[in-house]
Image (tube, rainbow over all chains, first blue to last red; front, side, top):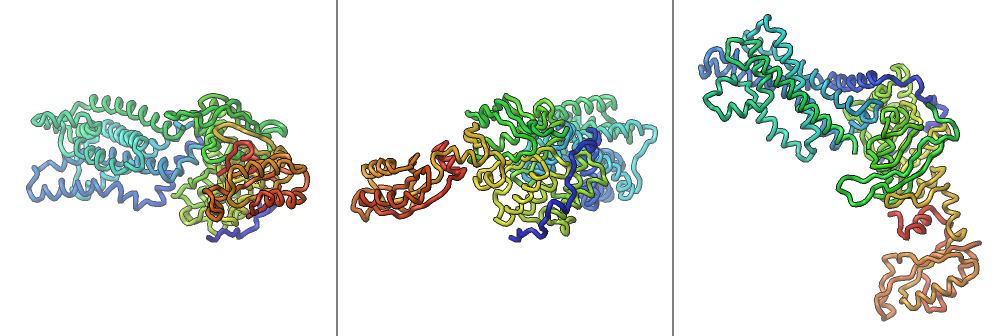
Length: 280
Length: 341
């Protein structure tokens, strides 16, 4: 232990902090400062961020879209069908991961969220910042998949005519992932963080209609019902409607409505969970 | 916003907190007030309700009933307003591990709306004052417990709070780090910052606090300056005697005889030290050693010889004899019959 102070630190050496009159900003200012903290941290570990968000969809795209197609195990056109699904997957999973894992740690063992909970903003706004930031990260990650797709597949399905629907569903999908992350991050205790992987992420990954169009599941009725419960399905289907309208898909307005309802429900549960963790 | 001299910086009225599933109240009808510029110590054993009280005052624990105010603001009704007035130095390290220590300070100030130029200047000044200027860019993981404590105090000062709460500020620190923290707190007192600290360490409470509230089982047992609390004990000084094993009959007789000595204002039988419990040398049963504390009105040293002769008359041997002026620990023992640990 080398605890000896290296400086006598007399009060005269530093200006006494003056009372905070005038230093009190609005709530918006504090909210932006909290958001800036997250952006700053992401910026300082950018390569890690890129690796974290791109690697999984990149491999899925490469193996299912490229390798299997080249070997003749999938039908021509499967890559076009898969690509919108992988965008959905990236949006939802990135949003979830960005929010849930750090939140479990921050409430559980690092406690570093405490300093932000003591900022002069309502506790709900701290939760809102988490959702906004995770959504932004998910959005960026999803858009990054477009050049990645072009690079691996040579070309991607695209339809400017449906850009409005595409943008709406990508944004909703990103917020959906973040909202799921808020629910999970406040629900799961640090000791059970492994459960997130085995019981949540894996099923999410395969029941979200990202690798198959939902209507085509009619022949496996029970699985079709299961996938209908996963809100990610409606992101996949919405994006398919926008990018490959010829492939049978759930009607876009249904997808959008289900996503909006899911958001309301998840954000309500997640915010309650956040309050429960933040205030005893 | 700045509390005027003489007004209460912190006030707590009939405060109650019961956690769900708990059969008892963690805080049980607590009332006290802290004047602006005061250093107020909440002293009590672990589980007395000190941390819960600070938790309520710092908006992290919702009170079950009663009122708590910081800088005149009701913390339950207006937590955001209350947070502007206060800063917290927690018991456990909660520094932001993704940020350098300088950025920990700067972002904290940003959360509190301090302007950019001002927060950089304050961060550099505080880091220099706390002897951390040359390590400003390092992440919190590279700092020891005592250094982390310093960083957290510096962080708390970044938004110039009216009231600073410290939860067990020197628990787990080595003596040098502890003295450093104490010095910083004394400087804050000179600057007029109101400080509320919790501690189970009587030395810390006595060394730092203008007034001390002694808590146990969620209730306030006593509240006054450390000097007044110690004066409230019977006697001005104490004499502590320990004998070899002593049976109950002799114990009663010795206690009676000691109580009759001149100037003895109070007598208290204490738990015997563990290593004096073997009575086999006497050939009798396993009697514990006898440990007695006498509260003496005048000079305790003058009672040493008479007290020793009382012991000798009963055929016992003195194994230890101590003179002391009362401490806050004695006040706690006097109030609860238990030690602080």
